[in-house]
Length: 145
Image (cartoon, rainbow, N blue to C red; front, side, top):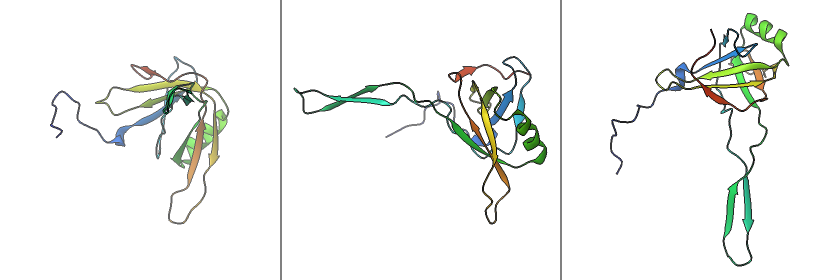
């Protein structure tokens, strides 16, 4: 049976995770508000599977990572939407800041496309941002101020 391990950092809710962007790698970053969820920007590699004549088993090995995009839904704030629309299809530096107790900030460069989301009954007006990757996501110590 699993036991409590005081060496582990207690789990933390995702409530304080933040999405930021900057126009240059060292330029001041701007936080994006109204984020509804952030998919992982760094996916594992695809599998390479193989069989051999002398075995009844199949095997697998890590292959290459697929080119991935992530879609993020945002609550629609008019001013933020207008600002992002002027940068649409521009390569920006993206930052995902996990809750403070984890000390994890993921960074990558990529273009993005902004669009309005579907309008549904009993929901907020939303927009969708699709992020592309020009660089591999890496961990950094801080977001540029």
